Length: 411
Image (cartoon, rainbow, N blue to C red; front, top):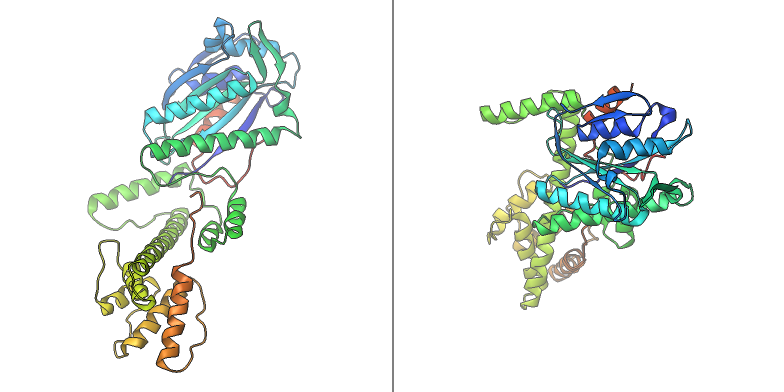
């Protein structure tokens, strides 16, 4: 599933960091820092897929040379506690191609140049060999001053101010989400990312009456495995596939993550079946079928696995019983009781409490019809559907590919 992450960090001298070291590490390059008199050589670094620099149109020619660019950025800052660069850390969708990932990252860099007039140095990294193989990501270093024809000039105070910095970064978070969603749409993916926090997404879903989406978003963040546990679980998955057996997690964290993912998958399956049921109900009603007949057709579709409709009510009952956790349905009921039982179980699946049944076959059928109309005609909308050398290596191993829960930036 596509996931969203964008974080913003600063490269501060007060923390013992330099923009020359940060740029060399992220790009897998060799840069001699003229201010420090040190050589940062990461030319043997693995996993760097692509690097490029984007600068304003009127920038000097030296801006396209990484060493010159960041040495100039360091030389421009004279304070001991200066912030010499800003890093935007981006998770890239694994569902799209390497070319598409490069394209949307370049477009994001161009937006930064256009909006703030800064120089942008991009490094796209492949997933760490011992980590999550979906973890494609990019490190985007930007200068903290505008780059003009005469060189670096004024500071980008709009990003430094407590009043405007958060607003600006939230705007760019939205830009990054839009770029990813366009790329996902181009390749036919139905999943979308959302830059808002899960809390904000849940509130929006509740406001529009989409209780299913709100419930799906109302969950704790997934436990992070870490490189060691992740490597152990990957090896066990490969061994299970090779031996033709079911995968069983070998670490406590792996078991927790596996269980949570299974629960979410089960929830999505039930939701997909209910969505199919609503569509079937609407189509049957439009074709002239009564509410009970249309409801039964919808239940058959919900109970099926999307491979056609089974017209046998008994088989439908058995499948529906599996969805809601019951073992075997009763088979000695009359047809009207079958309908009531099916409707009651569908209501439980939706988390609804059926109304009190009235006596008599006609009253019972009317109650069934009312509930089917209420359940199957209610619209549901899907929610739009992060020593310098050691620190840099540690951050790389912990690069992001997780659901962003709304921490907009780190100042």
